[in-house]
Image (cartoon, rainbow, N blue to C red; front, side):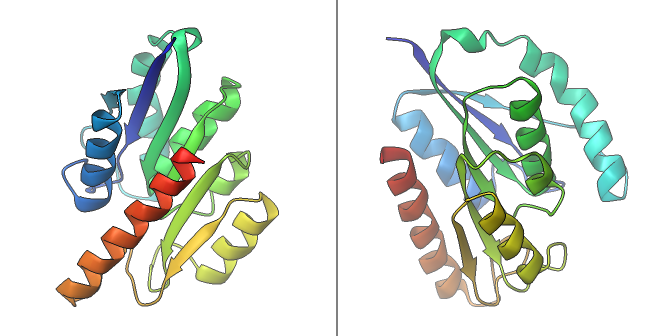
Length: 177
């Protein structure tokens, strides 16, 4: 039996110690996945610039992985990380299951339909209608959280906790399907 790999692609300022990635990474680790926790360092301003810089930083690390050894690959990504994850999987023609936390419109340009996405409707970086249409066009289930910001959070801590639970249940179901 081959190994299982989970690559964590953080966002700008949303690292793997934040709730979405922290709990996701913890679940994957507890279920036998080798975790590759990517770090970009300081990224420049602007999505295009941040994407290009993040891409350049992580490509050598990703290219050092022997993907043929993996029986299951999961890319868990957040924001700008969703773009990098989708593009890398597309360019390397990898069979990847994606968990997209707050994907950007740029992400869906590369996405192949193997994934699940989560979006807050008050996300200032991603228009809900546009993300909804783009995910539908790629057959990617999109779960929308009313009032959630780019971290899928609000000022209501109990809402945040309930939402984290709901998100975790959905990606666990997706992974175990």
